[in-house]
Amino acid sequence: MSSRTVIRGGLVITASDEIHADVLIEDGRVAALAATGTPAAESFTAERVIDATGKYVIPGGVDGHTHMEMPFGGTYAADTFETGTRAAAWGGTTTIVDFAIQSVGHSLREGLDAWHAKAEGNCAIDYGFHMIVSDVNQETLKEMDLLVEEGVTSFKQFMAYPGVFYSDDGQILRAMQRAAENGGLIMMHAENGIAIDVLVEQALARGETDPRFHGEVRKALLEAEATHRAIRLAQVAGAPLYVVHVSATEAVAELTRARDEGLNVFGETCPQYLFLSTDNLAEPDFEGAKYVCSTPLRPREHQAALWRGLRTNDLQVVSTDHCPFCFSGQKELGRGDFSKIPNGMPGVENRMDLLHQAVVDGHIGRRRWIEIACASPARMFGLYPKKGTIAPGADADIVVYDPHAEQVISAETHHMNVDYSAYEGRRVTGRVETVLSRGEPVVTEREYTGHKGHGAYVPRSTCQYLS
Image (tube, rainbow, N blue to C red):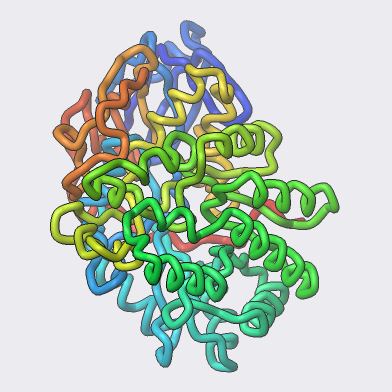
């Protein structure tokens, strides 16, 4: 039995077009689009008709950077694959790419298998994996080739967190050389972790223990230095590079310079760097701990460079780095020592709405909203045009979005499994109304109609921005 749905009367927005069109969905995929009111559109018939008059019809969001159930600092990220993907759906995101972790002394395969076991049968929306490479050796390098062949086509390395995820320049270069051969994309957490650890030790010795010092020791210059070094190592290796969670003016400048030189270098930022600042880290009574993440929040004046980078395409993607820890019992592990506060913030549910607010505020246009939240991450991570657009043959991952509805973001109403909101009390214009994942309604007129196990694992092709 084939199933058909028609979405009528909405403004269809993709990265390239805006058109008042009806969308015909058949067997989980987009079958056709036709201008609203034309004979072609009138000929669309279906069992389910969704009225999108006065609304936007947009591709489901693709969040290329999440950490569900991630172990960190003696605890675990508070969202499971079940709760995290449900919250993502509520926020109009229909695909996540999470990070499987290789532990030092273990194989990539063991890490990947462990993350498959966590996610399988539990996700409300589709998902893929990147691979965190913590232990570069000859066996690991061979495994990278095998993972690319089976659809895990991106590998994350850390210049930060010595003793945990850290790779030195030689290990980074070897992995980049391998990626240059097998078509993989190296993703880099670019902070000089060795230098930062010195500054952490010195700050604590001075009695500087409050959350705000997390931001002060993780200096913007050390993000910029690491970004520069990663770019040059990638250039030596002849490999593409994707720098995650770019937060600072100086780091954006390094990416801009590299791209002006014609290098295959890409950058991602996150809503927390666009909307929050060190003012939040400095909130009294340890409230600042809610905003501890790495790279850290920066002084407000850095935001202008991030918005400019998004407009000029020197930054291509906005992901969340969703890695939530509850304030009570988790963030509180760092009372009296900011270095023990678990690094990470909730955000998978808020990204699409916050970026729509950026449209309302005039930072970006509507099509750029869809580009940085849907199409570019899908292309970056080998999911396009199956994901990230509304076109015949694409998966029917579609959001009916009310651009006029107002909402107040709050932990009282969000669906992430965390006891605070990083955007508590923020009023935004625009709200998800209905969400389809492969044609199945997971949110229907603000009611959750999805279920765990609907989400399927999606193998990915290689980065589609590389010639």
